[in-house]
Length: 263
Image (cartoon, rainbow, N blue to C red; front, side, top):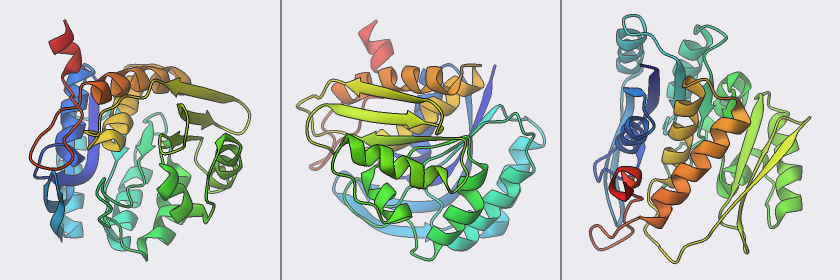
């Protein structure tokens, strides 16, 4: 059984964050473990409160699972603050070089609520992204990190070059907010892969970023290459978006268990 660790915040509504990560890992056939970085009071309407975990708690959780159980891949999500980004980067630097690290540079929630302090961006660029196997920013996060506003596929390629300059092995830019087909760009600067998926008339898409990054980490743990893992993760998230369902009176979550219900 492959072991995948998520380092992220909690979503009390169950659609994103640690909860989405663990559901995704189960669906992808790996054992999910967690290091909690923050607690949010969150539902289908937005984020009502955020409480950051102490750095000591993050470090102790990490050692508790990694030193005993071990880890085959890591996914990071909401890291909240500059000190927590620094602590997580330091912990991940100690892992064996063959453990892939998927960094989802979470900046805001689906509802536009901020989940990352402004001063944390420097640590994200200088400490965490350089040790990432692949980073998975959406277009807003691309702008946060690089100052580049992407409006078309050509702009995605330009932004990817700027992100690769920070040092990750691969960049996956998610173009779901562009007009036209839902296109993502994966590149390491030498080779590029374009992933296009169908769009659905479904607004219940809470947790898409967390889910995609966790699926990529899961498929990497299972031995797939980066392009293979991204391709499999795209198929999984596309089905989950198609099956997203209403929950509460706002934006509902994607369906992490769509494969089992389909069968």
